[in-house]
Amino acid sequence: MIKKTQINESLLLYCIIYLCSFNFWDTKFGMFFKYFFFCVILIGLIGYGKRLLVNKGKIQTTAKDSVILYIFCIGLFLIQVINVENSNQRNLAFYQYVFFMMMIPSILYLLEYCEIRKILNLFKTIGVVLSIFAIYEVFSGSYIIQNEYLGIMYNGSRVIRAMVFSGSFLTFGTIMAMISVVSFYDFYTNTSKLNLICLIINVVGLLMSSSRGPLVAFVISAIVIYVYIGGRVNLLKVFKVILIMFIIGMLLAILGTILSRNNSTIAFYLNRLQSIFDWSENSASNTGRIDCWLYSIEKFKEKTNWIFGIGPAATGARAKANWGGFVTESGLLKRFLELGAVVAVVYYMFFFSTVHAGLRKARKEGNQYIALALGIVICILIEDTILQITEELSVTFLLWMFICILLRKEKQNDERI
Image 1 (cartoon, rainbow, N blue to C red):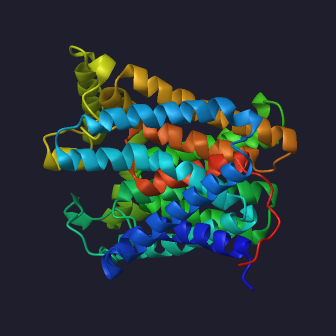
Image 2 (cartoon, rainbow, N blue to C red):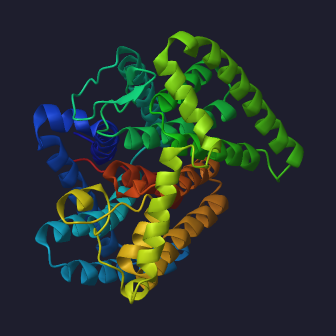
């Protein structure tokens, strides 16, 4: 007989594998694996609903406020989605707001039957594989999955940014940032050679995306994990971490400068790293992002936009390409502009109350993954503030998976089917 725990665990692990490499499966096999992912979410929802019926609607006391806000959020989202006139925009709005919210109880249900260590080991292994492919893409100058992106001309040579199986170097960078956070956590809690190798390879994979936001988010998250596990905030300890990272960064910069003299790829990546600190007019990418933020803020202040919003899914790359939208370059601005201040505040109240409930529960039960989950949350919050990254299914699913690790119940008794 097959244990129910084994089935649910396998389903969750499938979701992780699919979401970290979705472009490969969708390109090579059509929509089959994506539809199967949707089926897994449905299975999780049914399982969670069944659990509520068995428990007569009882929920964890630490999460009652979050549940109320969750229901309120979905109701407000549905009202706004229904009022969208363009059918394509309405479908995307339902997907980005309602479906993404529906994933949360499903993830929580599937996690009850999964060993967290298996998830983390799989996550790191996927990261190593993706990193190897990313290195190949960058230094071969060709993508494994062909796409319309032709790269960037730099010093007379074409340079590409790795995206591997993520369909976008921005999404790939964010996924690798999360994997790097997990790798850092594992190395810090168990300084084995294997964990060190995984950390180095996965950080290199992150660098291959040439995405600066995820890199900065990873560094800050690593500092948070280091300080949290070490106990109370110790300024000397924080300074030590920053100093070590600064020295490593300087050594890499010196090495990169030497190697970049005859290599446009290395020169480009070094320039991208240097531009993290350059927010002057000399950096077109940074000033372009600031322009998007300022434009979004001005649109938010127009007429009644700040109250009712301009409509869900009215911004983003797909909106710009299909129904005259524009890009906010910020998930925070995206929500406030699309939903209006009231609905956006309700959503963030739900988000932070859920994280708070998870932290309270985890501390009470001695959950060893508090620092890791906190690091992931901070990583994505930083990245989503400077880029609308949580409109990506993979990023949102993985974010909520780590939050739900704090909220999950202990594994139930095995049921056989």
